[in-house]
Amino acid sequence: MLATVLTVPPVVLLRPVPFDPGWIVSLVYLSACVGTVVTVAWTAIRWKDQPERFRGLHFRLLGPLVASLGAVVLVAGLVKGDPVAAVLSWVGLAYGTAMIYFARRRAPLHRQWWLAWHVNATLGLFTAVHGTLGFVVWRSLVAPDASRADAAAWHAGVLVVALLMRAVVGRQRGLPWGFFDGSAAPAQAPHRVRVGG
Image (cartoon, rainbow, N blue to C red; front, side, top):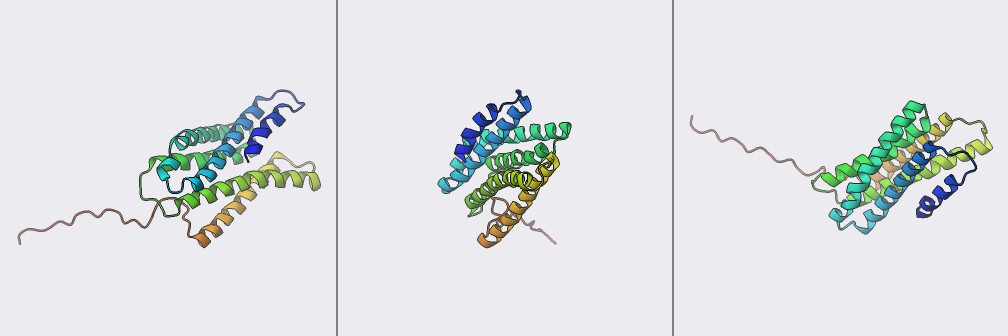
């Protein structure tokens, strides 16, 4: 994935087409998202015994960055009527928001919080790769005139598959959808003692 992040920009920038600012924005957004999700997948395993380090500086920087870029891409996609941009905005919005929340909330963590982050990140990368690959193969072999709406449908369909896979893995491994220990009992209000008759 690191090789992908490093080699895609030169390929895109050297395309024999006129300069397009929209492509640059998309490139920056997708590179930031892939780099962030790869980082999360790797550090979740490496720092599984150091949760404060895991949700440290890189979470506080990358979370707001990809969330903001996701919002920009969503608005741009809606304004331009580009369904692909609107669908792909979920990466920054979902991961960025989750990272901000995880970095700020102080609550007991689920014992497998790190595995939940790793699996979520891995399946996020699965959607990025297979959504694009599936559409390219479909357009090459079946529908040469496939539209942007078809590309968005491929990405959305692969996202649904990834969510189903997440549900299966979560059930098999006992992974929560969130990262915090939901079994911790909330603090009880003290009982009032009635004095007198």
